[in-house]
Image (cartoon, rainbow, N blue to C red):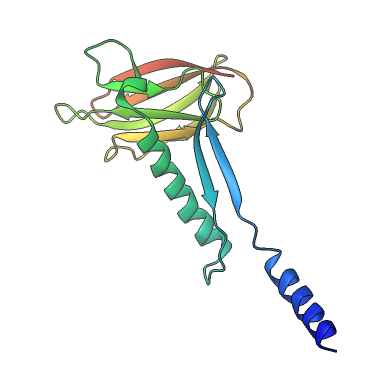
Length: 161
């Protein structure tokens, strides 16, 4: 009887703990080399899925910003205050700029080569870093139009691979 009780208890304990496997995620650079390995521990939470997802997105974006070095960003020219990374882009394009003479970035528009507006990112006047998700766009070439509050604008040609 003792063996049967122990066997039943062991099976119950095994089935309760079998769902708690840890997940490992990897991040890769543009050449396909592994650069970050993360162990993701799942835990039960009182938060809704939407709240958890938003917090995870913010955390992931902060982690991505920390992984990128200033040397990774490309500039129009050496004196320019606007830079971007990577080009060609696979998933996310990171944009960074400095505020000089109160000349702020007002908005960023994404256009196809045919001139069709795909997306407008507005209300950026208080920002100096922004990331744009390119996952849902098909492969091709895109034009980013950066609009400043003084009426000036610059364009960048971005290639999606």
